[in-house]
Amino acid sequence: MAVPDIPPGFDFTDPEIYTTRVPARELAELRRAAPVWWVAQRRGSAGFDDEGYWAVTRHADILKVSKTPDVYSSWENTALIRFTEGMPRESIEMRRFILLNIDPPEHTKLRGIVSRGFTPRAISNLRQALTERAQRIVATALESGTGDFVADVASELPLQAISELLGVPQEDRGKIFSTVRPTSTRRSSTTPSGSTSSATRTRTSATVASARTTAWAPAWPSWRSS
Image (tube, rainbow, N blue to C red):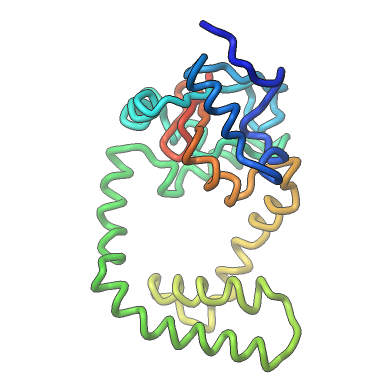
């Protein structure tokens, strides 16, 4: 296999890279010279008990990985490419029950159930109510003049929508926020040195993916060895 012309030790999952750019040149070089390339990491640096992952950058190979869940499993190590260093294994496994991290056929069954609540008709029925809620949220924030933007604005509409969809009383929506916020805060506080932010994963998913062999691929095209 040809050796790609990329900097030694270049790690496509390093969040620091994405603070300034998407590594398009390095990805193109991998596709040209080594479409399946081992990326070494210090053991545990990405939260996994291994020493790296295989980067898969060619479209045909990514499709094959995404369609072979019995070999490249999202369930094994989840579809997230990087966690905080020192992440306990049980914390990683807890994320298996998120739909994104469940393999077929269970994923297909659950997706079929969930998708019924997101048909055009179902969304249309929510549109007016959510539009009015959004206007009230902004008006309240403007009137107060100060506050916690995340709690008072950014999270408020999603919380109200989720509560509506799940049948949770609106007065109890704060309980949902208090349950999930510690995890979100912990992740964001370690970025860029610890875990990859959602924005980074989204920007990268179109160009590269990484996973562990018996691990996964769909969200990011690549895999890790177990």
